[in-house]
Image (cartoon, rainbow, N blue to C red; front, side, top):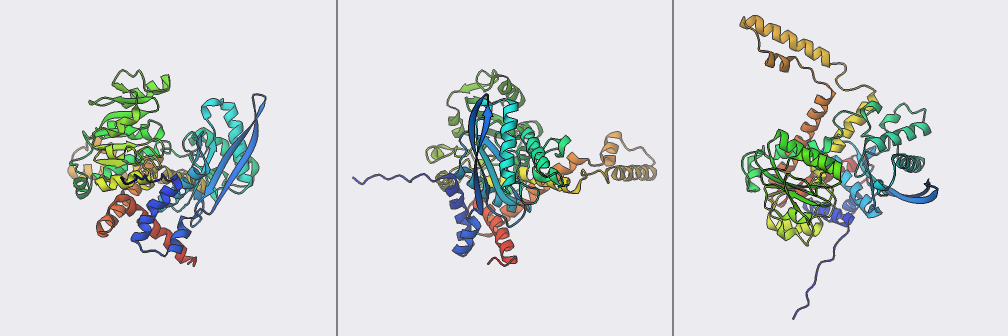
Length: 475
């Protein structure tokens, strides 16, 4: 009997590179150029002590700069117990491709601190965060012009405010200090719409997908988002806003939500806001009355549904469960939720996957808007909003004069309304995600060798990155 062999699992960073290799092969790119694009420019590991409750604890963190073909390099900082160097490097590479796909002029970077935030008080986390920031700032891995962090898993507006204040203390002469991080509170230089930007971006991706009948038919779907049966994994920031908006604005049916302590299933639709409040109150989904609890939550990934949205962590769909995935469309709201081996299996099964490097780019897109806002020192809409309202009022007056009748108030309000900052942020995000999808879809359609959206997205990104290297004479 022949000996059975199994493929050895690859690391997260290897998985990203293998997926990118498909695009390099499709482009027939020189191996040396491909290697230059894939390689991580630099990475730093810092170890620093902090006095916690009378005892010294040593914390380990990383910051990787994958590419500086555009500056600054951009990418979040995550706080999680399992963070390691390979994960940070993989996420930095994804950021490089992500920014290129959506035409955001940043290089790719990422940071991580190996810590369980739930074990520390707010005051302790502030001391730890400020110390981590000082290490990165002093070593040149954090500044408005070269390397700009943002929130990620385990971090949020609070941590970004602490980091920005630390930078300002070390560089009081820098008038652009607020731009050293994005995702800050609005009162401290942040921008409205950033908190929900990644989740809203996922929704804009799905809306654009359903505007392309050929792509919809290829996924064995029809119609629009209304009534579609959706399974979502993870009800953190990204998953929550994605599920909430799909349910409330698009009338999609969220039939299952997967969390750490199991899954809640309800064929009629899980009330997302109620479930989120239950999680905040109890710490998990168990005991939620509006659905059936499944102890082994990950098995819900295999449910028969129209759309599966993994919005939790990397490596959730692997070679071990990929064969049992039955969704008609997978939308990667998380970074790296599908391993390279699983991706191969799903491609063979013909399940379309909208890839992470594109789908969750809403966060960095709105971070770009915030960075620009900080550099210009003026909020969007401040100069033109009232002018637009006045012009709308003149238009109403003209219409009423010509028609010899009164324009209904509901129509008046829409015409006179001048866009505020949130309107402009959402408009810019929608435009970005729509145009990027159109470019990816066209690339896939026009090149018969490209069979999937992931390869098409990487081709889009790599062409832009390679062009930037060529323009400055790198090769």
